[in-house]
Length: 219
Image (cartoon, rainbow, N blue to C red; front, top):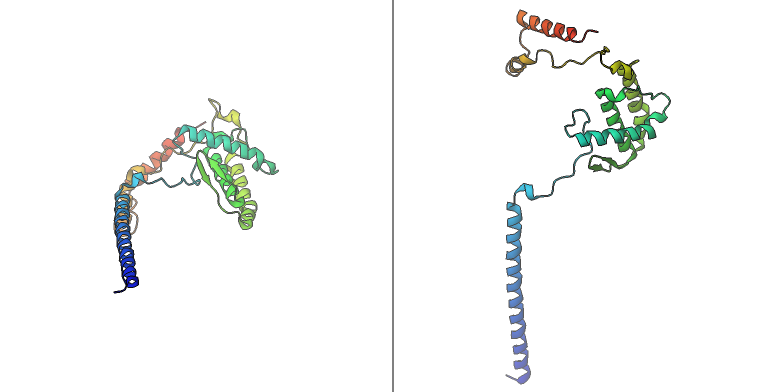
């Protein structure tokens, strides 16, 4: 074998050795990555970052005091900046005493932000929906007038003095009618596809509950 041929064989042997070493290193790295992925897959879901909270949620029944306060204060700012700029959108002085009115205005504000693609920030939740002229038109043509109409119906001529002690205001029912019978009613629907037969006992209970409700809210 000539000297040139021998030199080429030695060079090829060294290249093969380096290639084999690199393949071994890559194999070890692949095994390490596979182990890391297996550990991540086996990790409890609580270790994963929580999904961002949705800005769409009710105001009525909010259990957290700070959240309820922040929502109401933010809503008042929006009422001054937007809602009350419309000539037909009057609010009674007792609007914050009516949970249904607050809830109506709360979702109307959300729909306004959604239509214009504004950042909706309230009590730690942030969303950025895309703006839409169709949504804007729907807000002006249907949503806002509907809320104005329902608030006028709900509040009527009500004002803050009517909420003072000793004044009479129509009250909501404390419980759903026949709430104690719902298990029987639901079981009948589930098993027969229809509600139970209306018995004399059910009629008497319904009348009693209605009369008790009316007596407790007489002026």
